[in-house]
Image (cartoon, rainbow over all chains, first blue to last red; front, side):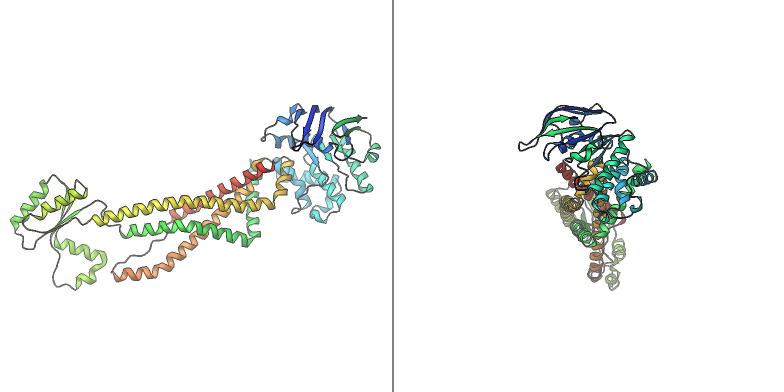
Length: 219
Length: 299
């Protein structure tokens, strides 16, 4: 589903975030990206979602070279990818349900159908009772769950999560990892970056370790 | 398709909500746009009213030939004969002294004419010459003045011609001003929208990350811009209406002193609609430029 062939990413200023990476991720896989901070985990995820373009090499998603996508085509690629961010990137002037509806609104869903799906997604992350709340009123763990609901509401085949448990304490972390396991069970491909290797060992799944932009180990 | 329509309506509602949430900023922007529109539109109104006032004046030069009161019937016939054959004269019209008086009365000068003991107006010919250059008009005037039975000959439309030339310049100036202020309007609108975009930067970035097209992101801002332009146009129309209303009394008093029923003309419905549409379009364009520039910068 995802293929990196000799991908290098250098940022302006000379920082080499990824150095000659080649790897493949199959459909339905659960993959953890680990490594120290600055190892290139976020960059790797950004390349998949065409948030950044590779300096050299090719990143293909479902056979599409995403580094070569036109401006116009990128939104349609992103609609098939659920993105989960460490800082949640919620819209604080909209309620929980409106935040969840945003991807469906962008994709052009009928409002009634969208509401049904949004409620189902909120139910999955345990926030259905808070649908009218504003995001500020949510705890950190709840905000992360809302971010997850928004990422999965349009039922993407691929979910990318960048340090989804980075700011959370252990109880919340286990909650969220269990949610990811549920998505994995229904066939979603998941790529999750984390610097916390202990918590993921219990989850199974493939682990890719990055070190200073290079592929260090795979298990 | 129905979703597309729904998003348009939602964008419009969103823009309205945002405009009403910041009434002061909205009001001041509308005022700035309104004043910017008032200048060219007001000048247009001035030109329109002068043109209206001068409306009956001939735009082509005319020559008025007044017969002397003592002219004999044979002299009158000779003059008629001469005028009908003259190669330099295109059209000719006889205005009897009674007709001339009736026309004065019709122009609202009956107060003055009623006080006269007898009709002071002479019989006259109004001539339209073929050639309109000043020198040829003058030679024709001299030639006709020498005919027996002719009291006086006036090439009296020179000033009307000059007025028309001046009005042409004014119209040209209105056009140039409109273009200039149209550009100013684009700039004002674009700036106001940029402020909007900055406060919604996060929303734009998040929307793009989850697959929003540029078109989707642009839409609410374009509506915002269009509404802003429209509110500016309404402000301008209100300002112009106030100006006309406040000028109406002094102007009609002056006109009455001259015995004229003249009243200031306001913008008519078509002109008001044109102002509204143009301001909306220009402001929309300003929004479009601002959003596109910002979207490129976010890349």
